[in-house]
Length: 249
Image 1 (cartoon, rainbow, N blue to C red):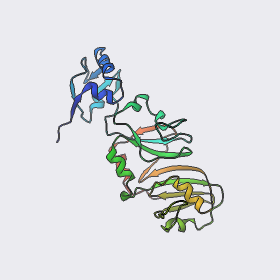
Image 2: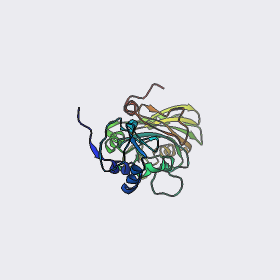
Image 3: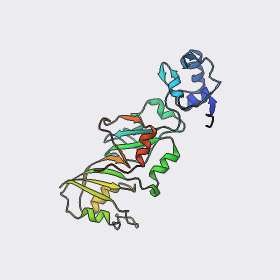
Image 4: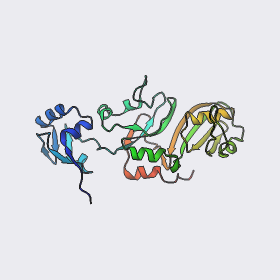
């Protein structure tokens, strides 16, 4: 078993967003950092980044935030933008304020446009992020689309053909799977992440998406008890579900 990396306490807590190194030193001197039941009065000591560190350390009587390598699932509401800088409500504002100062920073795994709701993942693990979005891994994303007009009946064949071209592009889309719910509602699973892809696919067959909601990434389904705007930390089993086969419909 490899030994956990040891880092200076003030560096670790600063990178987790708890403040500057000077502010961390003040936290320590005032007895607000506790490890294994004992106050840590000096912030320049080194501490091992063991997996159980968040369970053993408290800051102001609260458990330490997750260490780097964290992944979250979040139920994105409509009207929220997946950006750090754009105007209007941002997805990162749904997280604790200090989490926005973490280094490495949390990033969304792909994006949902402002008017699309549903499941989105965030992580500071670049390897995990690229593993999910890599076309080689064929992680499908499923969307529920409410349409302006009834389906014609041939959309499933067109989307599955692998020949559909979107306006302004010169490469056909990979085959996608359409599941009709009713005449104006459908679930569409895609393995690519082109700009506004689902909306543009329905536009290409003469329809218009009125509302769009993502309910699944790979084998991970948005939990029924995760309300819009809420999030939770993903454990290893939940992360593995992303790469598992989707559950039967």
